[in-house]
Length: 102
Image (cartoon, rainbow, N blue to C red; front, side):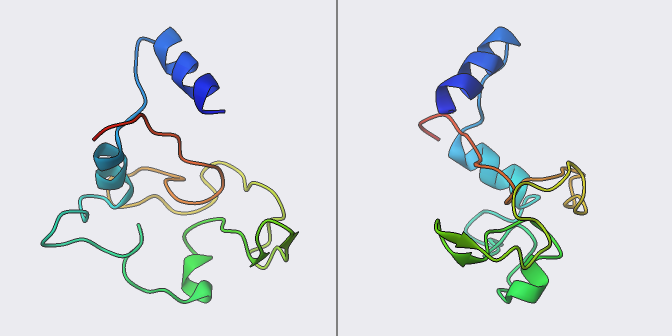
């Protein structure tokens, strides 16, 4: 839950990132008004390309997951390639928890 994530960060002496921080990290710097990409991997929006970069729900959410990407649940950590900043799993797989504000 969001509360669990926030408490864990507090326990570690850290905090959850804000939305702008998350977007900047997930999009590897391509998040501003001049160079924003549609997705963390770029602007390609076809499902075939998306499944090369992230574990995404396929099917009738939240009722039926067809596991078209090979995963009915979560995928293993670092299964997909990192973004240009070297960060893994910034899109898909689990909910991305952020703090309120920017």
